[in-house]
Amino acid sequence: MGHRFAELAFTPTVRAIQETHGSRKSYARMELGEAFNDALTQREAEFISQRDSLYMASVSETGWPYVQHRGGPTGFIKVIDSKTIGFADYRGNRQYVSVGNLSGDDRIAMILVDYPSRSRLKLLGHARLVSPEQAELLGSLQTPGYRAKAERGFLVRIAAFDWNCPQHITPRFTESQIATATAPLHARIEALEKELAEGRASRSDPPTAVRAPSAHREASSRTTSGLPASCVSACAVVVPGVESGPASNSP
Image 1 (cartoon, rainbow, N blue to C red):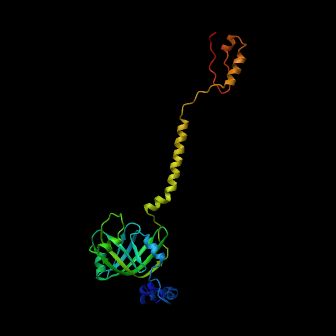
Image 2 (tube, one colour; image 1 turned 135 degrees about the vertical axis):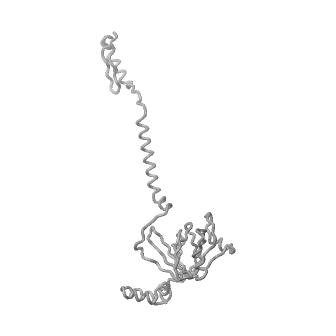
Image 3 (cartoon, rainbow, N blue to C red; image 1 turned 30 degrees about the vertical axis):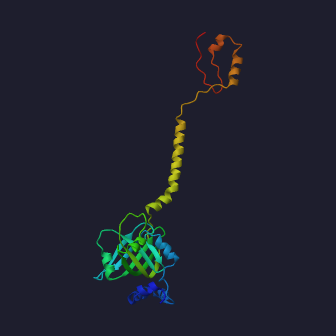
């Protein structure tokens, strides 16, 4: 038994190719012991519930595999229990290829990706459709407040899962993730712009007239009180901090 995903995915041909490329020995150890990776743990459940999209593959009556994207608001994939997940199928281009394929062959393969952390989870299972007539069950698979119309639902019985390595996954971020990450930067820019505007406003204020301090006025009065009027009028009295005007020519 061992690793349930390896049991289903590693066919004799796959094993032979692993042998040719030197990876068979390490993968052979996965197939030993009791069955595992056939029931979701808390790690898988949390990862699944945080996704807003998945890629799912089905098999057609002509034998061709078909890959389709499914998406919705974050958390649109519901973890029902350790062996079952479900999600509402919202209206798209109405080709119904996946729906038709799964009606004839219920086997489904899915990949869920967390691009920022470069993590991906592979799931194998058996899918069944939830029709609009099953209103209560379909309602439980929908996300409150999401305005798209659910045409049906999918319930997937998990057969096996496996985590992929992060190689070759390009990090990508949603608008909300970018907004959260850049919020402190926008707040800092706003604060700096406010400081700059206040600085410009203070520099544009008209200059305030400076009056000589009372002590300087008294000193000036004492200095000039004993001088002839003609001398006082002919000279400009310089008081620190006060601009002196031109001397008067009047006697």
